[in-house]
Image (cartoon, rainbow, N blue to C red; front, side):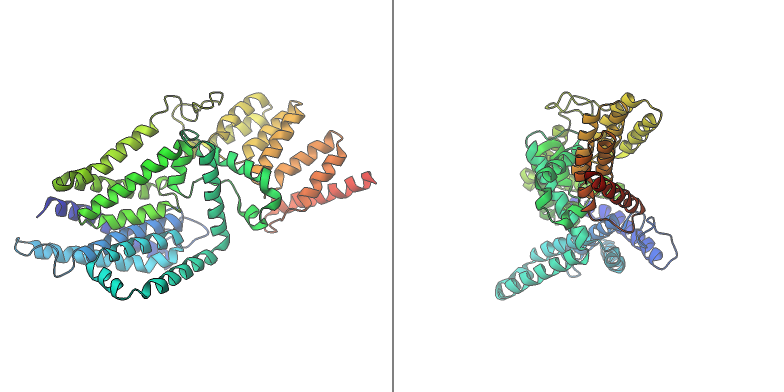
Length: 476
């Protein structure tokens, strides 16, 4: 048995079993035998929501299909080696079970990124087969028809959850702007959410009046990048994007040359990473790391193509080395040395909520300067405008009205669909006797759409309309 084939067998078995277990658990959730991990969705598997679950199932299914395509019945492991026939049968059974279980739950996950990831991986695997390429050459007229079908499916996926799709497109647009603002070295480790917030604030300051209301409504403060490559780009610049893409492409090429089914799995993982956040999900992070390890092992074992095999190793070394180039504390960048450094050991996605809670507690205790110092640190880990709002309230309490107004304006442009920043600004303007400015702010709030199911927004809208009537009477 060839060494690469041994690696494939040893690595595929746990992926198959893991995929079968996850799919089985998800199926039990659909049947009501197990409880979902998210109150709004019936199917999540062992994940927090169905999106990453669908991505995981898609990757496991891609590996299974890759095995079935690369090692069909008439080929596969040679029967001349004792015991190989039974092993071949066992692997095919596991692959078919993984594929069948995945087909039962993947559609119900409603993970469009997962569907797309599996479709792209299967299309690439099919085009590698000589008979498929030959059939395509003989039926060229199918190419334009297939292209139309693909576009129709993509449009259907967009319309299936239109608001979510618009939000995803807006997030990518802001991430491109954040990368363009610091193209060579990025914002720094852990500073991606802050860079996103700065980019979105600058965008809406310039284009709020001309932006579609639908886009304004979906613009929020995402915790994840929803594109791992762009997320790396925000923190490490264009070199980080190029190195991460090189790592993926080189690993897929090596796995393909090794005739490994993991080339399909890694392709699905990479496509899913373009529209989701697998590096923030432990199961998908482990799965992706496993795919890369198999690629590196396969590259080392392929002596004949060692130049190709060394590519993923070199890309991984360069990527990790590039991410370790910042000798300062996490959250502080070289290009902006005045930023407050984050406490050693803190991670942006685990601790920004704790920083906000501590800062808000200090605000309630009347320790406004300490609160602002802590909230400034937390704002470097998040794009949530609530940090700016509480800092504005601190500035108000200290009598720094101009600074408070600047905080409220910034919070408004960071997420322009929220009423609260402008309500705080209106209250400040009324309290300081600037009734004409308060009237204009109240009119801005009154023109904003309100989600009637959101009790807080409805209450703020009523307060604003009441203040608007009073301000109009005073103006007369």
